[in-house]
Amino acid sequence: MKKIIALLLVVIMCLAVVGCDSGNELQTPNDTTNGGNTGNNPAQGGSDYTSPDASKGLEMGYSGDHYIVKNIGTCSDSDIVIPEYYEGKPVTSIGDYSFANEKITSVKIPASITKIGEAAFSGCANLETITFAEGLTEIGISAFANCEKLTKIVLPKTLKKIDDKAFSYCSALSSVEFPSGLEIISEKAFECCTALTSVSVPNGAKLSSGAFSGCENLTTVNIPSADEWLSKQVFAGCGFTSIVIPNTVTEIGELSFAGTKLTSITIPNSVECIQSKAFMGCEGLTYVKIPDSVTIINQEIFEGCKNLEKVSLPNTVDSIPLNIFDGCENLKEVEFRGTKDDWEYLFEFYGTPSVPTFIVHCTDGDITVD
Image 1 (cartoon, helix red, strand yellow):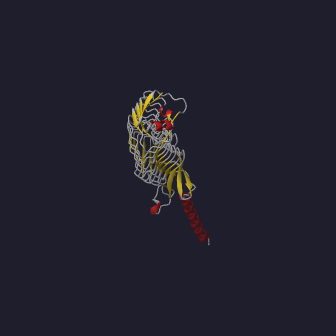
Image 2 (cartoon, rainbow, N blue to C red):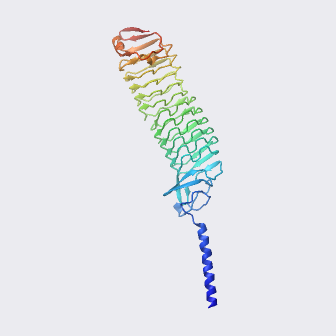
Image 3 (cartoon, helix red, strand yellow):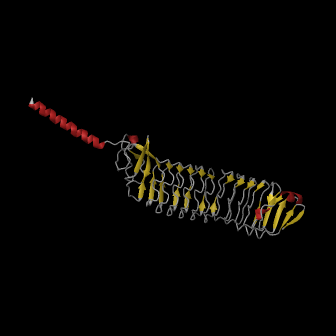
């Protein structure tokens, strides 16, 4: 009997040891810090996979069937590698403010990430390199704003939306490659990216207000044919001297080209409306012809164009406010494609503009405006 009892005790002790070892290996979705555990890709049957080269110590948040990168956690890497999987679940997004103002120099983003959250990498003053994998569809508001050492980005083919101010004030950014499937570049997305000299926007994309405003060295840019109207301040303060407006555009928005270095502009026959201050402060302009398709000219469209000498206007507009020439100190003549009666009917005074005496050449004679 003593031998049987002793044997049973040995068996019980062995089972206890096995139970303790199994408990040490257990991983649950409640774990939130990437401790570097590696295994198999979940698609291959693994249950506690973390990308082998992923940065260790990132704080993760569990959300049902996937993980989100919450913040840098205890990670001390300057070169961040976001894991594609964690604890057998995909890592699908990088959370708001997750790496804001951190001293990182590069980030590698895997194919599992579909969205980068608001201000996720904003203020990362040492960030020089971003590597995107295919899979990303949206870059959030101010995601990479004020990344002062970022020089080049190649955006993935899957990207559809660049949110407001996503790359604003990236002062060293000199090269951006856009994917052909991009749908929208939101407000001020590249505001004051002063090192940009050339951009090619895909034809399917739409440009929102101020998308490239303040890019003072941007000398070459195309306007995508998908745009039916040019948004407010879309190119304000840019450095180009000429630009082609596609014949799909029906409206030129407020301040669209204000403060640019334009020396000439061709407005296509598709344009119907020119909003206030559209060409304000374009000191290089000397002559502008507005086509017969235009029916609305709003106030001060040429304000401060001090070297503008001649303008050609149609009689198709509903009014001609005098202050469209406010500050055009060298204006000498207006070619009006209508009669003197048409001019008298359409010409309107707004405010107290600073306009010199100029001659209006009508189809049936001249009128002096002083």
